[in-house]
Length: 481
Image (cartoon, rainbow, N blue to C red; front, top):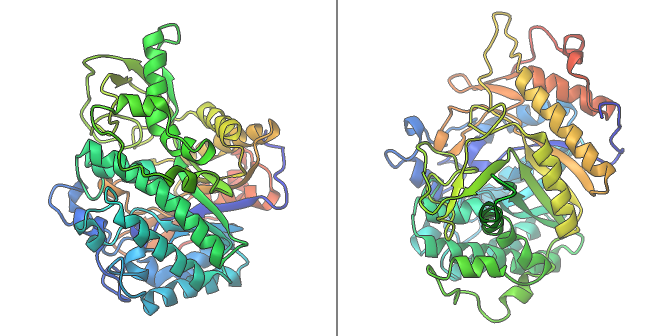
């Protein structure tokens, strides 16, 4: 696949999220989000790390965007922070917050980089959580107001708008397992949160189109690929289908069929009667996507067990460690096979291809891969280089799987590497590194990793760069700023 070119209009980019990189937690009129509160609560994050400073992108945005241009990015996916734009969640909009993102967009425009803006990447204003958060229906109106006001402000500058990043994580890691902010363990509330996220998207879609008819509106779903442990055992097949419904279809079916899957309703009937779904809600959700954002990192295998062993550790994407699967107590996630990243996730580009084709078949929408990447130790050599062979091999192989899916008919229009730079990895603090750029958190210096040079060559040629191309394209010492 390495010689297969990407089309001229294919978007090559990288992704970030506001709380993970911005810092400036108390500057520019920004107030607290649920992640500020969560990270400052003892025992919630590794080493007590917080996003107070993060990568200081609030001050270094111009240098960071210049680095994007030097890599050759044609697109940049980032999130705007709700507590920076509308700090209390439902009060006045903050002119200083708008001004910051206008400065970011000015820099992107300078280099011809297309902005892909996410309205919500998990940093809910704390006052809205104090009022009940996503399990409460009133939050839907607050999000629609925020979406309408933000798009109205930037409609002349941004075409691609994403409402939510990974609503599964918001609902089930935030309100079922408690592994993410706000740290609640309330399975019934998590299901209400999932519905309110879907409804908020549907109503925000209509609001966005009213103020910006040309907008391309998406939601970003994280990929769960639950393969049955034994395909010959109907119990394993059935429990894998249940996990798929609770992970994927709960956020897919309302947009395509206007219904929640019967398997979801049946498996959660002991937790809730689903009375939070009101008449007309599903009609408001159905058909409200122009583009689908796909995040993929790894796959997993599940088997039936009526008394499942729940291993120790913390893995929000691929385990039941924190009981983030309401209604799937009979699901046991098996040890992942193959090479593992420092997150413990397996490297499985075949799963990426399989998921892209599944979303192509079931959703029938243009897609942009909005996150794909891997965390590795990233040791700095004596000569200053970061020879992250595992990372650019991961990118190489997964981009090959993407091209295979395109060749088989999937309408994939862009690829955003996760992440532009090392950053605050949620409950893992600063212990995991995903970036194309290494961040020294003490000095805030950024250094190009070999993967950044590999990605630059791929973008320059619009073809997947061979793995042996590095020595001819890497600068030594590497670029730093």
